[in-house]
Image (cartoon, rainbow, N blue to C red; front, top):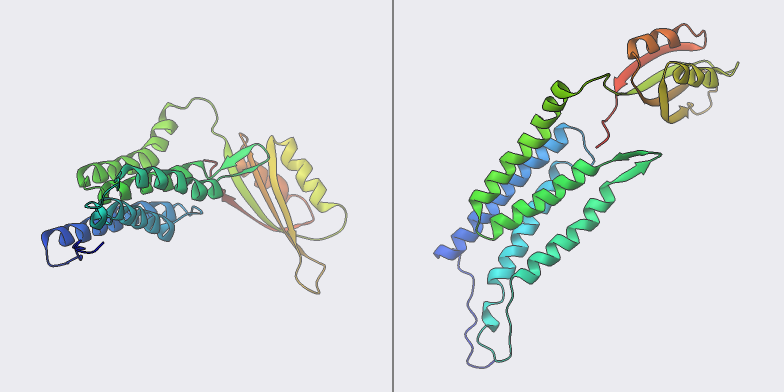
Length: 242
């Protein structure tokens, strides 16, 4: 490599400032997407999406500008698209870790797709396509915020309810099985049940039931409170399947 000039990155030239601007745009857009996911209390939130976005942008910058010192060598080939394809393949590991299946309910698909989209936004920023990056970010908010509202307007029939029941119950007399039976009789499907006891204390216990179904949740709460074993009850919306 004698006689080959290796260009150094200079933040004072136009190319260096453009690269910083592209990384800054990736930071801004991926943070906006991550903020929306964090506001929805999803498993991948602000930090995950931001890191995916800026990392993708950086890898695109490296793909385009990081190998300029070998372009003058004999038998050296240069294909920036190879790095881009590897980014797309690698992001699948993160997306696959977000998706999980419990019984017949699949969760995390939308969040995994959003991580994939954030990767694409970062690649567009690093690839010098800021207009496309901004446009896709706007489309992201349109899809994840606007489509659920549209579906609620066009959907016919009862809307499935996903709820969590947080109860304090007395032990004995098969209280928990009776509560589960009441839920199923009213048309709800039990997705998960957890019973917690305080250390050194056997009564009362905390019971969490995660349900879904088309029945009236207020009627369910009224029916469960009529059980002598239930001390208190809180009904909260559960995270919607994605």
